[in-house]
Length: 117
Image 1 (cartoon, rainbow, N blue to C red):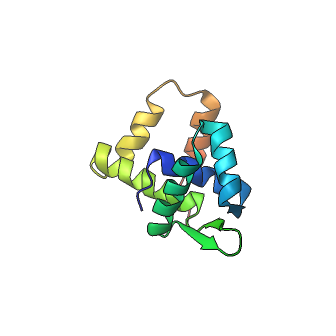
Image 2 (cartoon, rainbow, N blue to C red):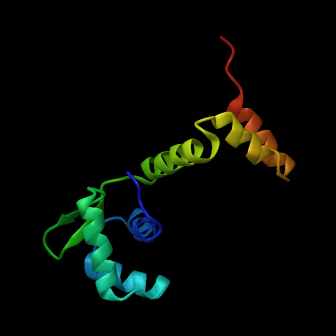
Image 3 (spheres, helix red, strand yellow):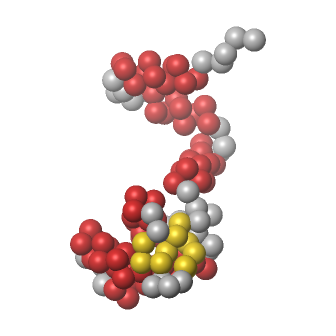
């Protein structure tokens, strides 16, 4: 599912905090981003409509139904498709052709190694 920037900001709070009341989410979003209470509630409702957030009674407690890993997987797949025509190798090439520190290059090489069979 596509989560837009403002929705992701709210989701990051839920992923970090766990189940949180809408009132507390509003306070956090005001502190972090200057949002008004109505803006926070609007984004909560949008996320509920997408089945990304559930409302739990009492006290309008919000629970993330989408994990950070699921959101990352979606965004990564969308990036690869949109910018690299679905070719993951082109994304990796773009990432490693820059000025990556040697320790990051070594870590990527380990991740990409195919185990011997």
